[in-house]
Image (cartoon, rainbow, N blue to C red; front, side, top):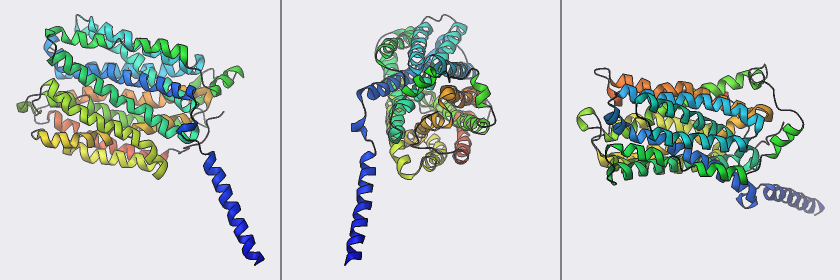
Length: 439
């Protein structure tokens, strides 16, 4: 009888301990207003980052008509923007470690906003290239500052979900870009200069920079490092030192594979939908192609939001591999459906889901790989070194499209190989989900 009572007492003790542990796990109800403001700032910064970049993607066809340049030149302009985005991510990552995540975030938002309206004033292709290059510089830095800000501010147990929320706003920005393009090009009577009005609308996020600077506080972990004089002098000496060199190189390689696949495919997709059928496209107007892109971006939005909970349930690397392998399978299937609008509409959200959701992993993963003193620098390097290879993708696809017997659809099908490579490589990186960001 005594043994039974002891067993019951022990069981009760275990249950009580489990209950305490469960109660200690934070939920969204435990998030402070300051943490919500921080997440909102990063979400809005990333949303407008997406919108301002993708306004060019939506305007490619009109710009080709206005300036008379080829598909290869159109791809090259996107490549220039992505290359300077890589430079911006590297530069502003270091700046964020030196002056703070909040100051850097507000500065980068201001840069890409001003450069969008600058793009609207372009009189030559060279002027357009310069403005888009400068816009890319700010665009690249925004993610490096915003992703680290969220990772360092939010509770570790909610890091995957918070980053999923932040990443999801890229899809909202894409929907905004598609909607604005449809309005400006096919609804309002703005003529051949309609693209100028489209780029001018990209200046609106500048007001967000003012709000971020006034209302968002720096993460405590960064302030403690600053006050203790622990901020690194040359962050690359640390990142490529003996302890961090391997994970730094692996992070750069993973980003390179992902960004080549992503930008190679999604830079050209709106143009394919709007291209004539005899050129291998779907023969849609901008408005009609936007009607197909928006459901795809809704699928992307759901994919971004779903990744965090799925990663918490099944493991982050396993979930990432499932997304990227499925994307590798679906991409060539979708590209063969150009003559079937119904099939395109049905498959679009699926492609959006698997072709975007995996990005929700990269922010927390990169934040966990590096110590506080070089975290933004490491995150900027890991992500934006990948932009160097990814930047080449639009141009490579444009060149391949011009080769007789190849065409743009066949060229874009090559992105599947890069998705598969990323799925394999992710298992070489450590997974520190829910671990506190200290040091």
